[in-house]
Image (tube, rainbow, N blue to C red; front, side):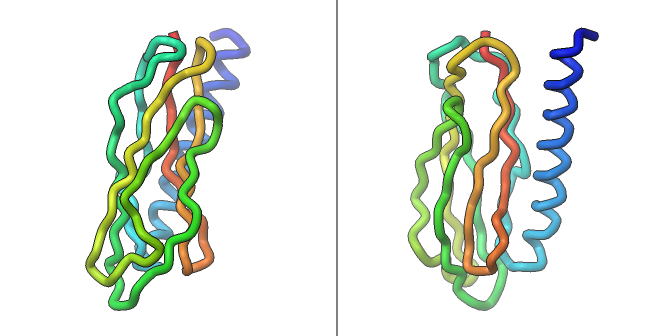
Amino acid sequence: MKVQQVIVFTCFLACLSLSKLVHSQNTASGLQISPPSIDFGENAVDSDTPPRAVTVANSSSSPIMLGQIIASGIDFSEKHDCGQTLAPGAQCTIQVSFAPAISGPRTGNLEVMASDGNPHFVGLNGIGK
């Protein structure tokens, strides 16, 4: 394995581990986000993938205020139908797309800020070709 591949693979595993750790913390707050990670696979440089859905649900008995929803990096983008407040039992959807700017492995996160004070992450991965 080349050094670059080892570094990218290590980053991929770290992002995946972080998203699983944060996902397990989501249960305690009432905010449920699934899936915990998205692998877009290979995609042509400067070409968008079809969007993949991320569901945000409130499993608590109290409203949850939603803050910023951000896809990190230049390779990932998001659109959502989430309002400022997520009522008990309600859910909303975030559509995430991947358009690699350069070839090779690309990683990022979808970050959802909520009134529980904890950022919630979905790990994002893809390969530009």
